Image (tube, rainbow, N blue to C red; front, top):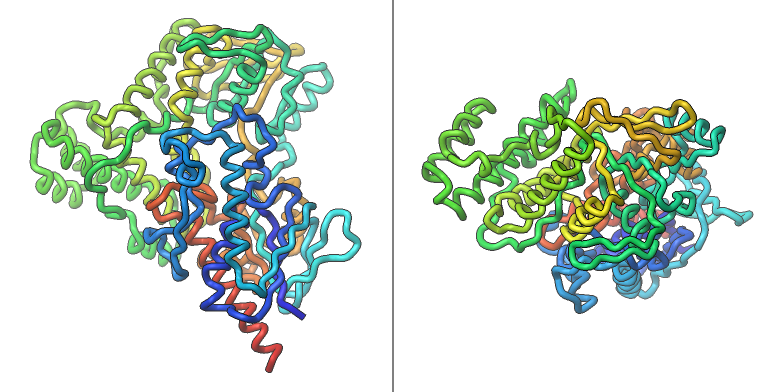
Length: 584
């Protein structure tokens, strides 16, 4: 009987794992025969999120030249590098293009085909277009993967969960809002992947409260404007008359920062500098554990500041008051207060200084006298952000972006560090394309998008939803529709996916944030005693070693690629040893 590996999830993670299996098989598993079963109701390669069957109006939020599914020498892994084309090279389009998701889906499908073709001849891939319901079986024996609509399970020597974003049951607040809306004939759309949401209940001209100002909101904005027949004439939006009026707010009250609109030139900051493997080793060695805010965040601040000032001093020395060598020595030795004093004396213009708190929460303590005054104020903020993020004279911003990627690559080893970091990273590094923010400004001027403010509060009372924010004291907006513009939290306990729920009931353990605990070295699922399951692995955003994404920009270390390689090598070594025992 041939060895069998079941991969649940055929999107970019599953494809990346197959690519790493193909790359490592000649060293670890040549000539033994293997059946790989891919289980996913969505198309292999693209999966649910990137499937080609979605609106062509929806874009990626990365330049085509910044998207790759292939490894390079910057990926720290044991397996071999197998280079390949970026999205823009494969599609023969301008690298600065923000490609639509249909094109990305086609690219991912092609990558999947290439990965399968690169497998040894005696390795066969079978796609099962259905859902996996549960995994059973003894720790030391073959696993049974039960599929929807199938009376008999797939038998597997190993199982890898490569699930992406998952649907979730409503939390207490969302459940109460949904019940309230149902009883009063209101509209409540809970957290969801926007492309899958039914937006037909959002009536033309009617006010809609929207909680969430990230990428899910951008998709919602597009589908309810251009998607309903509106169009742009330069910087002017020409409505179709079918648009609702979107009142949008969030915890920060501002959209994510624009994607940077220029290329890197010159020397890169030497990262990691203050938050690298040695610092992570020291944190992991603490018998009492560590606190993110107290023990980790100060090193992250220092690392991002180093990236910023390295770029400023080496590329724009005319905007500094001392030599870089002097600044670097004092910066490295100084504590937070000393570094702040150093920056004040060495960087004359406050606009050239890095202020992470203001970048993260620009509306903290800011108040406006009226709703209309705030509309003008936030448009001014977004216009300023667009100018800065597209001006190479502010290239320290791009150095900070590289610092964020470096930090993320280190944090993976620490496991679940809580939600603060992921929100901070997304706000600074994973924002919308500049053209989307310019469209948002046009929609604001046209009155289709209205801004609510920071720490947006929603209450259900008197038969309606009401929203308010301390940014505009005393102002309240009423609506009969509320949209939660964000993805469901990737928690194991509330996942609607029956497979994860069954694993949890079977002894898999979750973190305080609800993420699945896995072995940081290879992705094996941990039980309540901390023991890794010998035959079950998991990769993805619902685990406590989640990465910024299943694909990445070239030459930035690709944390997901590193994880894929480690899991692939562990799986192949296990299957090889299993085959050797069977022969013996």
